Amino acid sequence: MPVNPLDIYNVAELFGDDERLVHDTVKDWVRERFLPLVEEHYEAGTFPTELIPELAQLGVFGATLPEEYGCAGVSQTAYGLINQALEYGDSGLRSFVSVQSGLVMYPIFAFGSEEQKRRWLPRLGHGEVIGCFGLTEPGHGSNPGGMETRAVPADGGYILNGSKAWITNGELADVAVVWAKVGPYRGGTGAPPVAIQESRQPAPAGAPQQSVPIRVTGDDARATRNSEDSSDAHTIRGFLVERGMPGFETAEYKRKLSLRASVTSELYFKDVFVPEDNMLPGVQGLRGPLSCLNQARYGIAWGAVGSAQFCLEAALRYAGERVQFGKPIAGHQLQQLKLSGMSTALTRMQLLCWRLGQLKQAGAASPVQISLAKRDNVWQARDIARTAREIMGGMGIMLESHVMRHASNLESVLTYEGTHDVHHLILGEALTGLNAFE
Ligand code: TGC
Ligand code: FAD
Image (cartoon, rainbow, N blue to C red; front, side, top):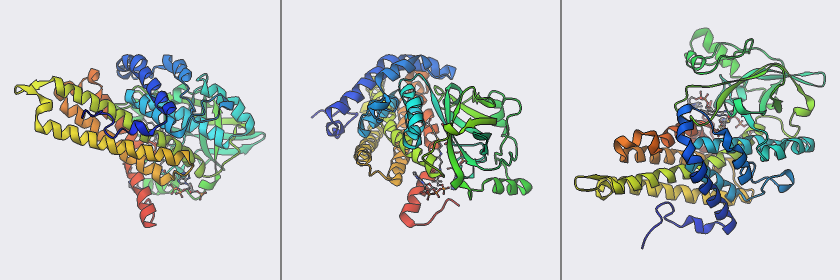
C-alpha cells in the first residue's frame, strides 16, 4: 500500500477540513510566491518585504486573535499548521510571522488596554505596521531576569535607557514591545564583543553600551555577577516604543550565516520618553515576556515540522534520481536507513504537535509541554536537514538545493526562544523539582 512520505500516519486526517484548508492555502502560496524569491533574498541577507501585503491577505498575522480586532480567529491547530506551511519555505519567513503574531500582537491583546488593542491590532493584523519584541540584551540572553534596560518614572510617562540584542524585525519595526525594569538606570558595565561590533552597522552616537561577558576574569567577573542580578525582575514592565520617538535607534546585524532571509537588529534607547499610555497595563514581572514566549515556542514546534518535510521530500527526490554504482542511491541500504530514520522522526514530531494543538486549544498546554515540543522538534528537524544535506552529496551544499539553508536556519531556531539546553533544564526542573539554572 503506498504511503504519503510526508505524513506516514495520516496525521492530516486528525485536523478539521477548515484547518487543512488553511494549511494547504498557505503552503501553495509558499511554493508559488515565496520559494522562487528565497534564494535571492537569502544570498543578499534580506527579508522579502514585498510579500508582506500578501501575507496579510492570507490572514496569518495574529491568526488566532478575534475578528473584532481584524484577525482571522482560527484555532490553535490551524495557527500551528500556518507555521508549518511557512517554515516549509524558510525559518525566517515563519519567524517574521511568529514575532508579529505571538510576540507583538499577543502581548498587546493579552496585556494591553482596550485603547492599545484598538489602535494597534487591526494595523498589525493587516501588515500595515510591523512589530518586534525586545527581551534579550547583549549581556542577558538565557537569563532575561538580569536585564539592565530601565524605565525611570517621569512626568506623564517613563524615560527609557538601555539596549536589546538579536531582535528579529528590529530594523523593519514601526513598534517595539520592549521589556524593561522600572527603577534607576545604573548604566552599562562594558563594551559589546568585537565580533558583534564588526558584524552590525555602527551603533548610533551616544547609544548606551551594555555588558557582554565573553571572557570573564577578576573585576570583569564581579561586574558580570552584579549585572546578572534578577532580584528586581518583579519590576519588569512592557512598553510600546514607537519608531520616531527621539532617542530610539536600531542597527542591523549584517554578517549572519543563519536565518539570512530575516532581519536581526539591536535596539538602543537613549533617554527615550515613553508616554504612560504606551505601557502595557495588564502584566508585571518576568511572567509577562515569558508568557509571550509560550506563544512563539508553540509556533516553532509546528514550524520545525514544515522544515523537516521540505528536507525529507528533497532528499527522497534526489535519492530517487541520483544514480551511483548502477542504481539510484535510494536503492542502497545505507541511504534507506537514513531516509527511514528521517521519516520516523518526522512522524513523532507531527504527532506531538497534533496533541499539543489540542491541549493549547483547550487552554491546557503547560509551559513545560510547549518547551519539550520546541526543543525536541527543532532538534529532530536540524538532524533531518543535516541528513538531507548528506544524502544530496556535493549538490547538498548548493543554495538551489535549499536543504543547507534549512539546516543553517535551524541553528538559530535551536538557540532562540530558549536554547536547547535551557529547555532541557526547564523539563529537568519539572521532573525533579530542582532548579539547575543557577
Ligand atoms: P522563573 O523564576 O522561573 O519565572 C519568573 C516568573 O515567570 C513565570 N514563568 C512563566 N510564565 C509563563 N510562561 C512561562 N513559560 C514561564 N516561565 C516562568 C514564573 O511562574 C514566575 O512567575 P511569578 O509570577 O511567580 O513571578 O524565572 P527565571 O529567572 O528562573 O528564568 C527561567 C528561564 C531560564 C526558564 C527563563 O528565563 C527562560 O525561558 N529563558 C530563556 C530566554 C528566552 O527564551 N528568550 C527568548 C527571547 S525572544 C526570542 O528569542 C525571539 S526569537 C523570534 C523569532 O522567532 O525570530
Ligand atoms: P547565552 O544565554 O549566553 O547562552 C550561551 C550558551 O550557554 C548556550 O549554549 C546556552 O544553552 C548555555 N547556557 C546558558 N545558561 C545556561 C545554564 N544555566 N546552564 C547550562 N547552559 C547554559 N531575542 C529577543 O528578545 N527578540 C527577538 O526577536 C530575538 N530574535 C532572535 C533572532 C536570532 C537570529 C537569534 C540568534 C536570537 C534572537 N533572540 C531574540 C535572542 C535569543 O533569544 C537568544 O540568543 C537566546 O535566548 C540565547 O541567549 P544568548 O545568545 O545570549 O546565549
